Image 1 (cartoon, helix red, strand yellow):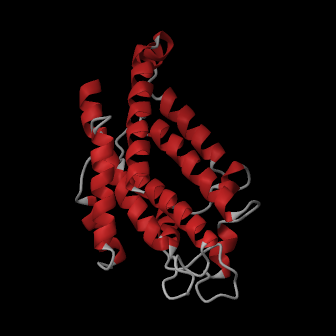
Image 2 (image 1 turned 135 degrees about the horizontal axis):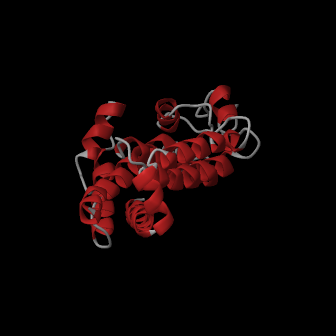
Length: 232
């Protein structure tokens, strides 16, 4: 998980930098920014709102749910894909929310990929914004998807004795910390994850994943903030 988040974090930073450089060097965009800079944010906001509208494509990425609610869903200590009759299954409302027209796995995949690129585009807007929350939620989505796949493949646990079941919420915490740590090149994000969840039981896997993600991403790209400084 740490290796995957480190690689995707490096790609995230690289795509963002290339997009910003393109917007600065493109002659047409130069005219837009110099004369009517407000046009670009309006176009992007309209595109974002249209794409995430619950009636359209947004139903595949839970467009009606805010990020704070999404994060709570990802961190839930239950399994979305489990049979409703099993005690580790989540409440029906959560499963329905994340399987509108497709399977839970398809919807999670679309959510991660969609917001991965939407966050990159949104972070290029000439308005005050933060990057921590978007990458934290995207990482949680990656971890949740990976955890749901593992739980689906091993419904009775990795040992098959139902003594140590797979809980995707743990993977979500690891993914959120790893991807956010990779993009920002910080380890302290693990502490924030522990404060959010109030659980220190999984401190070892989280710290290991964050360190691996940091090492991997820093081998290819500077941190997101250093990248912005270099662009300027």
